Image (cartoon, rainbow, N blue to C red; front, top):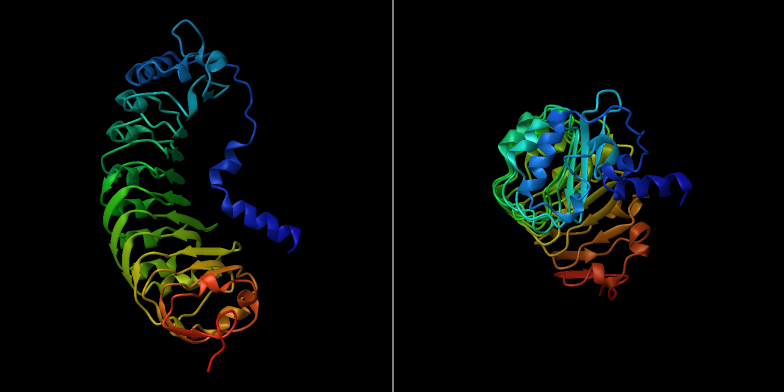
Length: 341
């Protein structure tokens, strides 16, 4: 594999914000804005004065002496919060909306961060990154997120969110990543998400929920890099996804495993950019299409636990996978399974 292809693969496996947050930031020159400082002290109090935020004190300058945040060096306004593995206990207070220059809100891996996302978040007109995974947030995915038009990255996966995915998220013109995995979401996937138009490609993660219904036909218009809808109760024919990688320079990764999909695989057409495809534990029938063996990028394929029949194609990815990725079908035969009679 060429070095450029290895780099491309590594980039799409990492959450996009890891690449951004790794960049160094300049030391602030201006002193902290008093209104921002007041809002942060209220936030700290609502979270039980956690030790993680011990440097946040009223007698120190928040731009030069507080951890877990960044300031604009020109005006002393808070631009980002980065709170990880915090001992905070409580919910976000309404004061979070009193940080008008905030463009990044990161609050991760804090199991005692509870409650809903407050409506005051919608006041953050500059917010681009909302990264709040591995907490204990409850309540719905707020519909007001769809009005925050600068949002490009939403990750509120691994929480306890419930209810439906709001259709308003499809209105976000800059959205490149939407991760809602491992929550308690129900209902169908909104067709409006098919209107997302980020030209550099889109990441969608909705796995480990209670979603039902089909993959919306509108998804054929998406420029997908990675989509994970695994471990839901999604039904019907998802083959509109298989060509969505044609418009992207990145490889296409699709995980639809452990759903209730039922369609004829032999009639599907696939992107030449397809890299990973997992259809295991569904009700997929028909033959395995021979063109899958001709896709040079395809490195991972799992078709186990379906209703497939016929002879397994040879070459390409079929020279790499084991019988485990093909077992428990109706009547598949040929390498790496027993020969056809």
